[in-house]
Image (cartoon, rainbow, N blue to C red):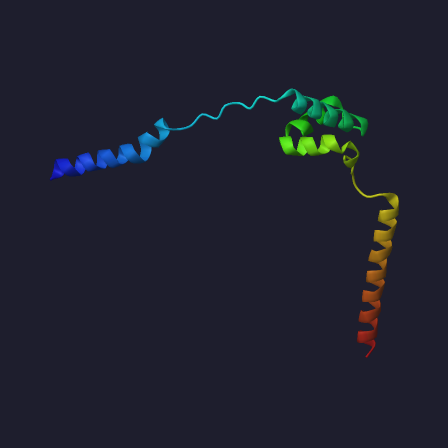
Amino acid sequence: MRIGMILGFVGTFNLAVLVPAVRADVIPTRIATSEEREERAQVEARLNEIGLNGDQARGHVDRLLPDDVSQMAARPDSLQMVSGLWFEEWIIGLGFAALILFLGWRVVAVESSR
């Protein structure tokens, strides 16, 4: 009885731990086609045009999925440099914040005078 339990434990351990490790699949490295390399070069060149240096552009392209690279290569004008707010947006935002503060101050002033 005791030997059967030990063999059962060993058998269960083998099935649960060792067998899946032996059957692990190896995923081969995907080799890029010449078309994919050309698309990557186009996207990288566009990123260089809009202000990124070579290493930054290459790093961004390396992090993209192949489908994203294909889409961006098909429409290079869709890539734009976006950073922060424009001066006009700051002025509008500050004006809106001042309006909200003024209206809040007026509401508090009217309510406190009652």
